[in-house]
Amino acid sequence: MKYLWCQVFLDRLEENISNIRKMDDKKIIAVVKGNAYGLGIEGITEFLQDKIDYFAVAEISEAKRVVGDKEILLLTPLIDIEDIINPMENVIYTIDNEEILEQIPKDFSNKVHIYLDTGMNRMGIKIGRLKYVVEYIENNFPSMILDGVYTHLHNTKSRKGTLNQINMFKNEVTPFLDIIPNIHCLNSSGFLNEEYKNEASFTNNIRVGNLLYGYEGSDKGFKKIFSYKAKVINKFKVKKGCKIGYGEKYKAKEDTLIGILGIGNIEHLGFNKDVKHNIFYDILKACYHHLRKQYCIFCNNKPIEIIGKPNMNMTMVNMKGVEDEIIFKIDITPILADSSIIKEYTYDTK
Ligand SMILES: *Cc1c(COP(=O)(O)O)cnc(C)c1O
Image (cartoon, rainbow, N blue to C red):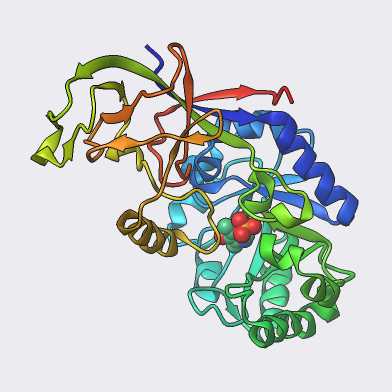
């Protein structure tokens, strides 16, 4: 029985894309790493393939799951030379260090993008070395297609740091603007910031994930494209004064009808859905919310009382005032939720 599922509203996804198109005419690289931010890479790429310019993933295993034949930028550092010795046809590989160049077969004929390090300091070609790398590719790889160059803004909250990154990038790529077709540095939060966007006017692609799925940009009309739903799998009557659940933490104040939902810790119930920064930030935030009373189950927009603590795969709720065949809306972060939760690709009927 289907007792927990994730609705993904494709019309909202499409609206988010047209919103981006209205704001700018840069090419859209749709980032679908992490199982399309938890929303299902197959379903999302199938729908997006004719609406975006190309995809980006973090691992080759993800590239294999992308539906359709759009090009896919592989964002990972190229640690594994195996990936590049048997290249996937429509994958654009990232060149992020000079050593790897020496190991790539000389007849390599895929497209590549060069990744420049502008301060994130986890990988990338160093500033000052782009000219060398471009010449090395031209002189050693007759079939390799140098298709792009990019960098990543790692802390868009810091105005000074971000402007500095964009300017470092600009100075380094300016001599190549007519030679290298795709230049990109803006992610979702970079794109949403007018100042960064203006500063990056020399770029012609954006790489966005959060914005597509509506985890960011609600103030600019971007819509969350998902909603978790659950049905009651069982009901149980308890008398006033009975203690309920693990650790007898809850005592019924009156005769109570309890509904059992087939969801629990394993689905990260109660993890707040707003992804603003990164997963670690969200876990900290979730711990904070855990200590405060916070509702994460709703019925017709009214918060529902959770009885006791959610178990591994069961949560008890107070059914007072809840109709029989009701469907609950559940707050879960797709990024943290169990990826096996059924996805229902649908249209918002508002
Ligand atoms: C994840 C990722 C993105 C997308 O970032 P959003 O904030 O979701 O838009 C862009 N570029 C790189 C290199 C990434 O790893």
